[in-house]
Amino acid sequence: MAAVTRDPSAPGPVAALRDVTVGSFTFRVTDTGRPRGRPVLLLHGFPQTSWCWRHLIPPLVAAGHRVLTLDQRGYSPGACPEAMEDYAGEHLVSDVTGVLDALRIESVDLVGHDWGAAVAWQVAGHHPERVTTLTAISVPHPGAFMEALASDPDQHLVPPT
Image 1 (tube, rainbow, N blue to C red):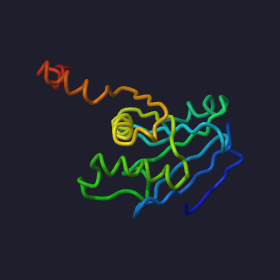
Image 2 (cartoon, helix red, strand yellow; image 1 turned 90 degrees about the vertical axis):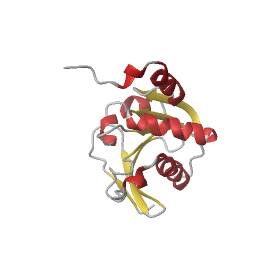
Image 3 (cartoon, helix red, strand yellow; image 1 turned 30 degrees about the vertical axis):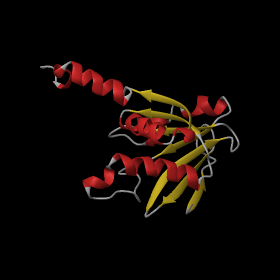
Image 4 (tube, rainbow, N blue to C red; image 1 turned 135 degrees about the vertical axis):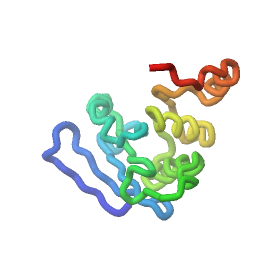
C-alpha cells in the first residue's frame, strides 16, 4: 500500500483513500467503516467509477460493515494499460483478489453493477472461497445469459428506436 489519506471534514463516515499495488498496477480503493466490520467490496460498472456507490456506503457503514470501493482497471489512474487484451477477465479477477490480498481480507460480500457484476460473477466462479455473498446488479449469471442467447437468437438484437 503506497498511501493512506483521511479526510475528516468529508460528510458521512470517515474514509481512507488507499493506493493498493497489485503487480505493476496501483488501484485506488476507498476503505470506509469499521476496520474489523464484515467487509463489503463494491465494483462499479462501465463507464462509472467507485463514486457511483457514494449513497450506498453510509447505510452499509451504519449496519457495521467495512465498505471498500475499488476503481477498477482502466479507472484507477495507476492501472490503465493500453492493450485491449490487458482487460481480459482473468486480469480483472486477479486485480480483485490482489487487492483483497494486499488488504489482508480473506473473503467479502461482493457487490457488482453492470461491468462490475460481470467481474464479480467471475471472481465468485474462480475463487468461491473469497466470496461470502454475491450480489450482481443488472447482469445475470453467465450460464443463464448464454442459455438465453442460445435459445432465442433475437436476444442480442437492439430494439428499433
